[in-house]
Length: 291
Ligand code: GUN
Image 1 (cartoon, protein in one colour):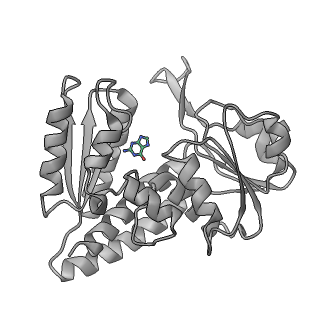
Image 2 (cartoon, protein in one colour; image 1 turned 180 degrees about the vertical axis):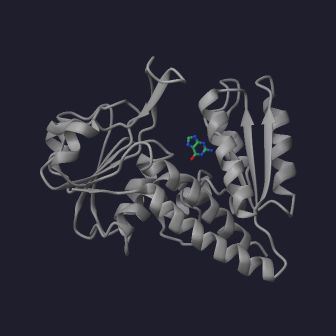
Image 3 (cartoon, helix red, strand yellow; image 1 turned 45 degrees about the vertical axis):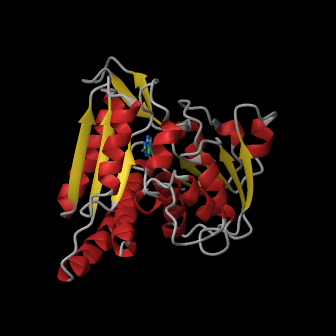
């Protein structure tokens, strides 16, 4: 059984990023990313802080906008428009989920698709479906695909079962796996909270992508012997024995599932580090594509 180290593959991606950043610097260009956070959700704050830190580590231009929870839709739109028009900014990410009074879909549509490094804008969703490589693919599924490729997992002809249908992970993951070419060409089944006989379906999978957002949801009974399991979950569960009072666990019951697997990603240290690495890669791509 192989444990796929997201941390190691992410470091490889970041090394490629450093090389591209140096090449751009030689041309007098510097990729810039703006990360916008509305409100003070602790998990979102932690994500935003680590994205900003990674940008600075790499020498990217990073702008972090931390807006109060009382920020109105119009105020947020004004920030997005300003970032759209800022030539030093090539990527814009508005941390999801925003507070309830914000219309997230309208915010996503307001972002210039050429700066939508999250890949959430309808233009980029369409480009993914059309297999147009100029588009931006959401960072988490892109990172999962890169993990499969780097771990030498053959996706061509494999039955991949995606558990979860979110716009951030499940749906784009399915499109990536069914696209033509490396890391694609799979036969894809998408399952979700209304799926009947889920375990019977996941047991037919050569590759399972678990993106349901429920701690330890995928158990040994869901997995066939020799399957590859990619765990996208990052769930906070109470744990009074830790300093913070919680720990992070995946969507997969790792201890019982891992012994059945050919390969599996751990949590933490699996998909998590890949998401940020792919965000950096998308920001560099946006800079290169900017005229
Ligand atoms: N919240 C959880 N994952 C993501 C992500 O990839 N992008 C944004 N903007 N928000 C998120």
